[in-house]
Image (cartoon, rainbow over all chains, first blue to last red; front, side, top):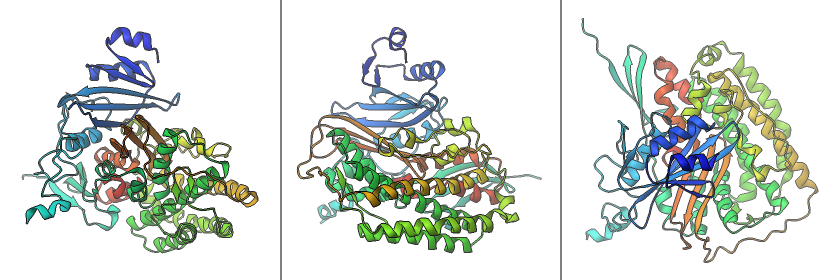
Amino acid sequence: MDWDKFNKIFEGCELLGNKIHIKSRLHEVIQFVIENYPYDILKEIIAIHNQDGTVELVYHLYSTVDEEDLMISICVNDETDSIVDIFKSAEADEKEIFDLFGIKFKGHDNLKRLYMPENWDGHPLRKDYIQDDTRLCWNDDNDS
Amino acid sequence: MTTTTLKLNLGPQHPSTHGVLRLILELDGEKILSCEPDIGYLHRGMEKMAEQMSYIQYLPTVDRVDYLAGFFYSELLCRIVEGALCVELPEKVRVIRVMLLELNRMASHILWIGMFLMDLGATSPFFYTFREREMILRYFERISGQRMMYNYFVFGGVRRDINFLEDVEEILSILPSKLDDYEKLIEENPIFIKRVVNKGVLEKETALNYAITGVNLRASGVDYDYRKQDYLYKGFDIGKVILREKDSMARYRARILEIKESMKIVRQALDYLKKSSPLEQKLVNPINLKLPEGDYYADIEAPRGIASCFVRSTGEKEPYRLKWRTGSYYSVNLLRKLLVGEYLNDAIAIAGSLDIILPEVDK
């Protein structure tokens, strides 16, 4: 893709290998990319809880036309834009990230627990998730 | 007269949900107005577990991500480690892996044929397909000691040299006639045709938008097969299976044709292995194995769509974050769209045609 043009429109982006790290305006960036380049699949959204407390979201796009990958990443605190209106598959990914990382996606109207029980506290894949939780079977000894 | 809609729970314990999937359907008469899949009954925390284990401790568990295609997930984790440490695989290891992956794909698709037919109410094909799948599983057992959770691929190579090639020869000689039998038994059956032709039509744009990959996408007419760009398959002749009909029947046909293509790939691998010299490989020492700091990513064409693994390493013994992408997860999400407007009795047939396997969805 045309990096110079992209950088002019969305200032403050960094290019790291085949990954573009953006600061904000996630929805606009994804919209711009799919309108101007033939990326047609959102393969997955990867979430990583960083040491500094933010959650990095990596949007992995793929084009079946020219067989190219593109990663767009953004660091968020606890809320960001949903892109369900662009890619329906994001519905599944965003739900998973909400369950496991506690990120709320604005515009996603069906955010609820996916793997964990509905009344569960905390988000297990966060690095600050409690490790001595007595609800976990390997901490049973703490009960007695 | 007031009319109300009916909420119907399909599953989680239903023979045709291939595991434990619960579909909450809203019905108007027999017509489906909305569908809400509820998953998580099989969640084992594969990703959380990885963060507390070293790579070699984690390796035997990854077969369980999808128990019908265990080789694919072992291969993914091996690929991550080999990629990070810049290990080049000897040609023979590459060919062994390709042969086992393709046999695994055949076993998985054969099982699917039986399951799909059972979803449609035909019980006997299930036993026939199990008989054929058994030949492949017995071979896996002879080489790895396990029928389903193989743990045969290791970082830098395979656990031991390949053996019992005459078994593979036997599978390749018996299977084509059995596939012909299936086709005769299944495709000329008017009930089968009525239940799959023009049912669950998946348009190309919808499939792409819902991130459907693998056979389901190719049955909707998109030419996307990751094996073409895969370094493991370098030098192999891989046939294209692309259908244009887009319905459940196309997905069934695509899988039958894929088994035939896989057999051709296995034949190429087998011819190579018969002439090859004993295995020489240099395995990665798994004790105190640490990946250099960075992000690693690997893809593979698994039987249920593209599977991928993402690892972020901070230079420790354990991965900082490990994420699986599995094809079925997106197929379940697609049910929301695909079942709307269909009749209840077609719901099972359509869901079955997507080849959803629940351990892969729940991870």
